[in-house]
Length: 321
Ligand SMILES: NC(=O)c1ccc[n+]([C@@H]2O[C@H](COP(=O)([O-])OP(=O)(O)OC[C@H]3O[C@@H](n4cnc5c(N)ncnc54)[C@H](OP(=O)(O)O)[C@@H]3O)[C@@H](O)[C@H]2O)c1
Image (cartoon, rainbow, N blue to C red; front, side):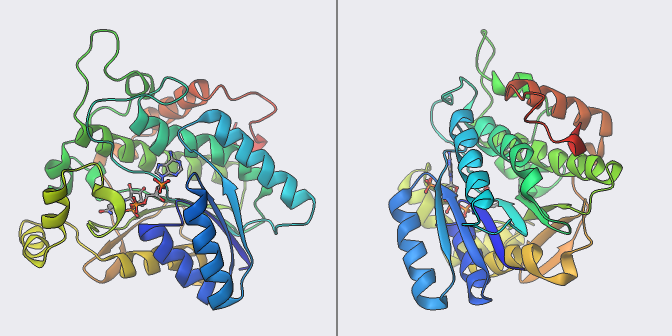
């Protein structure tokens, strides 16, 4: 394993993962919109571990930015400046509290950021991936409406890409921020499985894997919440309560190391189509929501997402048709 590309690798779980990967001598490509933070992390990793770190500008909520970033990355690979990535970690994302907002393309921000951006990014970058490489998506246990995690944040609704992209428009009531988030992660789970099915049908050796880091309040994840909520979520009392009521809990170091392991350890090489969860210091393969295994819904989600990102025939890799 030589090179890994990660979105959202300059903070939170992504940063803990890249620190682990760089310590193993793996070169890192950071893709994100916070250039100054990425530069700081790049300097730290180079100084501490002597690895090569490249930074790419990416606003994953903007289709133009995703296309520009993918083009820049492909050009750098063709020029021999970056090695083809052994793994792509689709990790950037979050919940967007407050009034509903829309991406530069006019799609609801949560769905645009957590779903459509990475959907397009993977389509565009698949041809750069060598044999046996991995695509790992950071999902969330909240995607499952039958679990405490799903209930606590707001049960996920139908994974209907067209409705989610236009959420809150046309006189329809907007979903809560929690439901927008959990549903975006349900869609992500379904992308993972649908991608796995398409790759297997095409005889590809690339793996598509899902990862739930568990509830990790010490990252920037709750930044849209009122300050007292952010503070209380990160106290030992709240962590104790979370465990008692049955939430999947973790900490940033363990979840980052788990993401790094899924991306790079030989143990996880043959786990395409698997959902891993970090829970209280243990990383294991678990079942996802019942609905996430619905192949018809997943195929529709895929086709609708393809339309929403205006994927052209030239852009779509043969393996994914
Ligand atoms: N923390 C938890 O409890 C938890 C639980 C389950 C799943 N997750 C998932 O874990 C992943 C990492 O989150 P985290 O907890 O580590 O929180 P975090 O520290 O806030 O990290 C989120 C990362 O996503 C990036 N990002 C957000 N919107 C972006 C955009 N439009 N374009 C490019 N980058 C963007 C952020 O970059 P900026 O600095 O530029 O905003 C940041 O680097 C997310 O997918 C999240 O949904 C978190």
